[in-house]
Image (cartoon, rainbow, N blue to C red; front, top):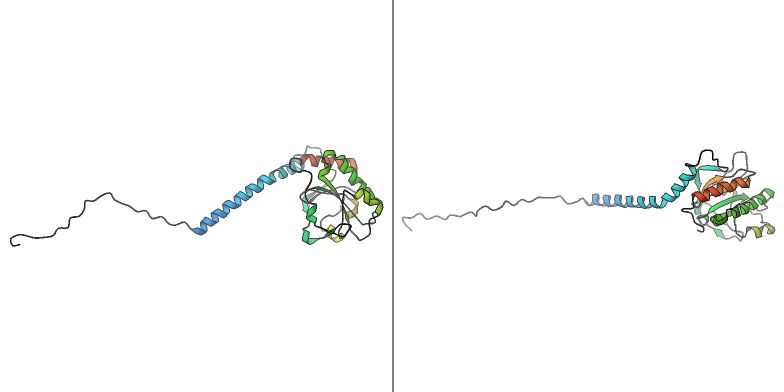
Length: 233
């Protein structure tokens, strides 16, 4: 149209609120996995600590917080020596049946070591084992008697009635010596050996022992561990 200025004006919309976008990086999957693994391990350690606390406390009480002047009659084995694994040695009962060493765990064990002929010293130890167990009274079911027979000699029939509630197991002398050992200057068969319910050898009693003093050691141990150790496996 002549005489007039024609133009097209694009009107911009009035400015509204300013919209801002924040950009966040995505989590690193490997880092998340590591954190979950770390949390899982911490939880496992916490559970282990709760379960082990009674055992640790009882051992601490016995080994560390003992009244001054108290002397153990038996020699403490420090650190205790764990029972060999099932695959490293074999045990057999008198009928020749295989017995897994781990099946002995769960009870205190009072062990004697001798050949099947069982000389007078062996007989004395078997008698002392039985008497010491009986003197524990209500705690006697927390202790098992064990005779490790280190040869193929037959066990005399007259001994069997007294061994009905004991473990009589054949094992090679070499295998036993990988776990237990005597005091210097003595033979393996001259001692009684005490093993805790976890299968750790922790005490050795002197040769020609005094049963009354052994009983005191056993009684103190049973008292120190009564909060977590129960009769039976």
